[in-house]
Length: 320
Image (cartoon, rainbow, N blue to C red; front, side, top):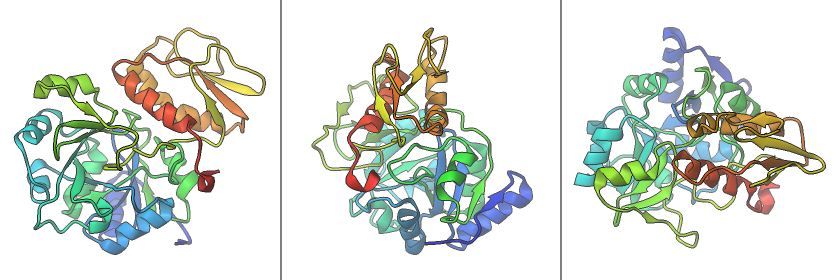
């Protein structure tokens, strides 16, 4: 799929009207959410969803997240539950994705579920994402707006570098606030953490008064972000490094000597927001390897370490 010119839509009335028109016409539009930039398409349009997979080079067994404007719209497409209601009423809009059984009357494209009987859903908090959803009047499927397996985009220039000529447009909404993808919870059975993300798991456990089961690496893929190798820069990553070696660039955390620091004050919220943009910056210098300081395995540190481990994992041949 080749598009001669990927447009940049300004985040004003005219630009957002053009973005909605592009989505309504079956086009692909990248837009900011509070987590990362999403690559949006009409979630009810099979051809548009197929074009997401083509533009990203994404494996078609890897499902997409459907974004909704409000809870009532989401309920039309999934079998709701008391736990879903409790989490949605408290944490939506925000960086939480729920996996629920698809309703038999749902007209969401089957392609976005990758053949599964469930669908991953969320309500984003970013005002631009909400505007697009409300004015389109339909749910929007939106994985991260990057080539599959590579670093997630938190700024419009990241999207432009990866997807120019592959998509119809990019809504320039500046930098994303959270900087990490949503937490994904599977509610089709025992509540299970499929992907740590912008909301720490312990907050969710406190709300539902139960411990979350943890998905195993050998389990079948049930939601986005479960591939072993994902979020990867071109350079190799060496984790839990206290110093950098020869031909390495150092990504630090806390009061350490480094080339770029996620948070000099050891603030995990700041580090999460800076993670992907920092990897983009360091990878742009074409290093052989990026050494990364240890990150505490607590709170948002769990999600940061999840992304770093996947970024450091051996890459499939087609990602080399």
